[in-house]
Image 1 (tube, rainbow, N blue to C red):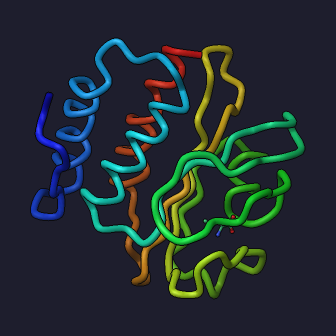
Image 2 (spheres, rainbow, N blue to C red; image 1 turned 180 degrees about the horizontal axis):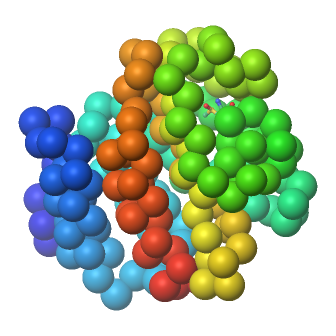
Length: 163
Ligand code: SME
């Protein structure tokens, strides 16, 4: 078993995501259950980067509803409609949404009032449908940049191999 958790904060982001991807390969060897993968990825991302909230919303009604999945952090909103908030926008449009300042995103849904910036990455299944979204909140503005979008998009590709 690899070490229990990682501290990725000292690394440049591309290297941090690459290290995390390798770590996930080891920890998740032989595991094909998407919920187990979501839980493991949430824990490693959350503690590795020191985020405020890290987790998944799963598509329970395609094109309509997201329901909270495995996460780390304070209580998350339970249900989000497609097209609503940052998560629903990423799910409806099938693209990563980076929000440098949540106060400037008109339809931002507040789950933890300490959140200042956010990134939401769509998770695609093997048939290229949106299967879930990965949502990360930080307690500082401008926490996420292009390197996070690319790194996280790469991490969630593993779901297309098990769905
Ligand atoms: N802020 C999100 C809602 C989910 S929480 O951040 C955990 C949104 O606007 O979709």
